Length: 285
Image (cartoon, rainbow, N blue to C red; front, side, top):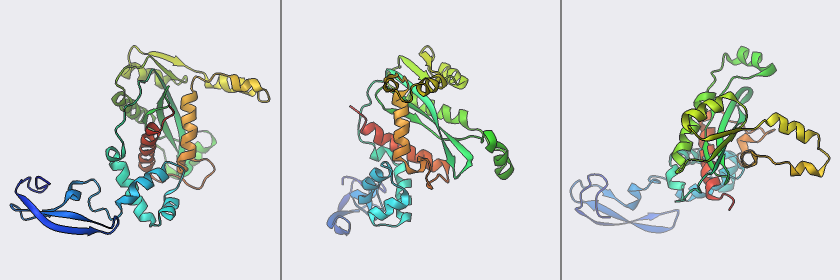
């Protein structure tokens, strides 16, 4: 240790060791001759003051492979409070868990939205995401939307008028995508929602924009339910739909017909950011 992290002085000296219970090892301690404060290499680490830093990597893998917070606590033999605190630490220190990696150049971007709920179906959420032709998740966000259909009146009566944050969530997602890309894509594929065309013209002017009629694809598949030819239908949004299916499987709070739900939308977005790192580190070759 060449300098003191407290006063940045270079006049330091060794001051014995202290024992680390988790690793069963000793770590050197230093003393600053100027401010008289002691420190170690751990003082400047992102895991400073953590009693169980050895659980961070294991928890990251568990939370991105279909486990709940409570289930992860059982597997790691710790309390749910410990898992909750470490989940918040992971989400606020994405840079420390994101290994150095170079994203492949993206030729085609696929943009669409998933839907989830905030504790109840009367409080739906939209999840805009962008996936490229290499199955890399380049941007993802969460925003609340009002309920529709027969649940709309019930939702307003019970919880009041719900603000629509769809545009805000899409703008955050587009902003993240522009930061991830080093080169402009050749094509962007979306469905026929008018808001996509407007935002693409603002964020990616001059890029070819192709729209896909999802309803036509559904009808085409219904006609061939019992035919082997159904598997031969080309799906231009396959990479995105496949990632959406993986998200439903690997993030328990997104799984349908489950009692695991999101209570705070911010926590869902933080969880999605963790999965984005895991996905891009272990993307298909």
